[in-house]
Length: 129
Length: 384
Image 1 (cartoon, rainbow over the protein chains, first blue to last red):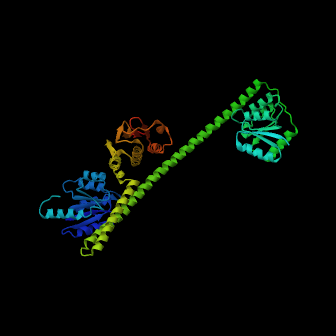
Image 2: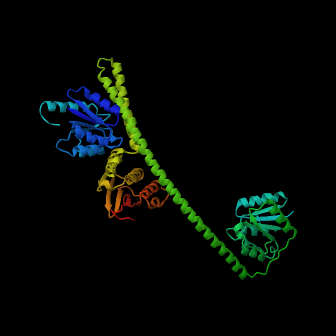
Image 3: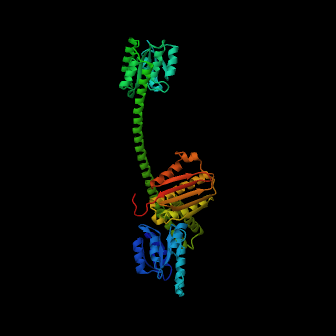
């Protein structure tokens, strides 16, 4: 299963990759911290899961979310992984179709949990998120 | 040595003459105005009077006129010691007509004053022109009228300068305010993104290590857990400080920011705070959003400090071509004197913020307080 990471801090990309490296069947398909490139890469690589930061150096991850969720048929599962998770941001993310909104400093252990359950649901043949 | 009466409503003017002439051995008598001077003269006739002209009760001319009317005092020598602007041709003519011996400009050098005093004391006596009361009043009124005219012109000029410097100050304040806003944004972002992110990584690394130290002694695990807790607490502080500087939610637009502010104010104060937001964010410029948000914060702070309210209603709507932010509470209502008082800094700051984005502010007391900010929005395609 392919995971794409949108994050402008290389150290955090590494930390997230480490968290996921122990899950069998997960491949980090790529990563970027640039808003424009994120949408292009996601469309090209067609990952199953996108881990998405909101505040990026050149813009907002919300724009990436809007772009990738506007195509409903093959949109990936999106986990917003951000430091801005106050209710206003959470609502904005959910309105744009985020499947999960996790706080970077509080919820990082939930990332492997969600991805594990996605892997096992695929392995068991159902397409549930 | 002579007895000299000096008359001036300005104590520093008196002090100067007192010191200078007292040092020459003269007996000095001081009066702060014309009426007091007349009393002094009647108590003991001086050889010479040196008087200011522009004084509150009677001016120098009227004072000399009073002296000349009193047969016991009529022959006292008088020197006018007055500011330069009182020395026009008409002033000098009227002074001569009243029998004033000399007119000295203020401030005068000591030598000039001593020369005049000595000359007048050596040749006492008064030569008055035979000026009727009617003529005196006419010339005096003409003189005062022309001084008044000059003063009004000077006041007009001063007012224009004042307005110009007020405008300059306002522009400076505007500049400082937007520089402060930029600075806050930059620092908040730096704190939240860089410091917050580094601490998050630190915490993630510690948890990663904790996961691989299953067999470590209990003390090591405990120390690691307390480090994680410390990182966590520090992340919370950093985020709180960043949010106090400038909440990141403002990046999502004014509606989201107002909603957030209302929720967090209610949670913090237990004052019920409802928000009714009927405006799309797209059309509102970020500077306008920031100023509206800061006005809201100030208004809420005022409610908390002064209103004793239990409910606040915030609305953001459009009326005609105006964006209107209204903050209404059910507290005791702001008093008229506080609204009128320009020194109420909170209100002044809110007014200036509104003006900064081309709007204005209204405040109403009575049943609770209502603050409204009106920001005119140009309809598309219309240039003003």
